[in-house]
Amino acid sequence: MASIGDFDPVHTSVPATKIEITVSCRSLLDMDTFSKSDPVVVLYLQGIGNKEWTEFGRTEVIDNTLNPDFVRKFVLDYFFEEKQNLRFDVFNVDSRSCNISKHKDFLGQAFCTLGEVIGSPRSRLEKPLTGIPGKKCGTIILSAEELSNCRDIVTMQLCANKLDKKDFFGKSDPFLVFYRSNEDGTFTICHKTEVVKNTLNPVWQPFTIPVRALCNGDYDRTVKVDVYDWDRGGSHDFIGEFTTSYRELSRGQSQFSVYEVLNPKKKCKKKKYINSGTVTLLSFKAESEYTFVDYIKGGTQLNFTVAIDFTASNGNPSQPTSLHYMNPYQLNAYGMALKAVGEIIQDYDSDKFFPAYGFGAKLPPDGKISHEFPLNGDNDNPNCVGIQGVLEAYFKSLRTVQLYGPTNFAPVINQVASAAGEVTDGSQYYVLLIITDGVISDMAQTKEAVVNASSLPLSIIIVGVGPAEFDAMEELDGDEVRVSSRGRFAERDIVQFVPFRDYVDRSGNQVLSMARLAKDVLAEIPEQFLSYMKSREIKPRPVPPSAPIQNLPSHI
Image (tube, rainbow, N blue to C red):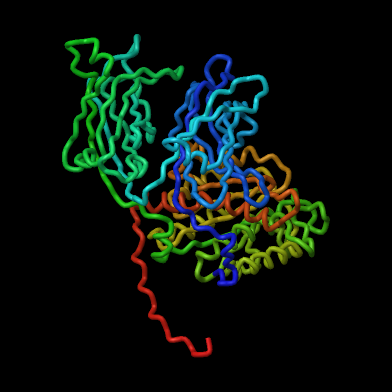
């Protein structure tokens, strides 16, 4: 727990509000030979002290378009008193790999401040994209809206009947696009359904959307829904539209609501035109969205487990070139990764006992290879006291075991999954940190272990150290493609992989390197935590009553 002495009023700011940035682009460069570009926008924030740019997030990729309207938003804390510099880079993506630098063409960039977007007329800023000499790169359009504190979410399902036929050789491939209205009469895209192929009577899958995304907490704000026929080339055919509101949609909790789909052009041209079909709201369910803090307040504990790679590819620990080198003056990469993640997670674990394992080493006295040996040498109780205790056990093991191989993850994942499987009532959530230097030897078994563990209260963080290529590791990070094994897909995305070298400060500042690493690898934990609680319909426990304040001794 931070003491009062740790609080720095000069460098501590409370955000005035949260701002949602919606991104669109127009007239982008076409970099694909046989189709249009597949754009994505990456947002970078500039640090106040070091002026370095750090990736904040990225939109989804939209195929075959030079005029994308992105659904995925950027939600930023807005500090009136700070100059918050933003950089938007636009890329044409050739692959869904999360390592965008290997699979993209640069389409241009724009710089601005958050205040500049908010302060623009109607909080809408349009800027030219630059960065490619001699070429017009198009424009980027940024719209800002302050988010309400509404924490409700809504799940709804819709179907359609007798939509217009748009395809020459078949029926239509319909999908819906939802927009919320803005105070100036414009509309902001907030959701797209999936495409249902070759039908005029589609039934779309249920979807969940925050109420603040749909109407920003204003129940009477207009919600516009466009119906399109999907086209492979990106020039989707407009079928028609209808308008509604959250309040009107909410009546679907007790009755079917039917909306006429109207095409204004057809309505003007054809006297006998009635509609272009109907859309029916089949179900509508509103509920409160609980936060990570709600569960922690209710007593949920995070259980932190560490697994460290002791394979020979790390190098002899007594040599300075080794990734396990025990430098008396500073931590090695393993120690930094362990301390960076562990010191944050330990605040959410009341007993501060952390199981710590090694894998890929020969153990004394008989040289038996182990892929889940306790770092403290105690098979009955692998717990170490605090993160410092884990570090001490790690350094002690380096002196007693022989680095060997192979690099097997499955045994330790299964070990932690077994513990997580014993407590599934929401009172405990497990976080496994695996630190490794190389390619997994048991990828098939590891995928199987991840798929099995995805139904349990467990998240897995993998930090790659050293110069190795970690492309295969990205397979386990299910941000774009969900991990699968033998035809079964993971129930949830539970793995986050990062290479440590991406976070190392060039000036050698270890504290800054660890802070960057921790911020990125822990960012997905609350979302993964909430996805488990929601999938099991577990609600936060009531906050325990506060203990009565004791009278303090007079000398304090």
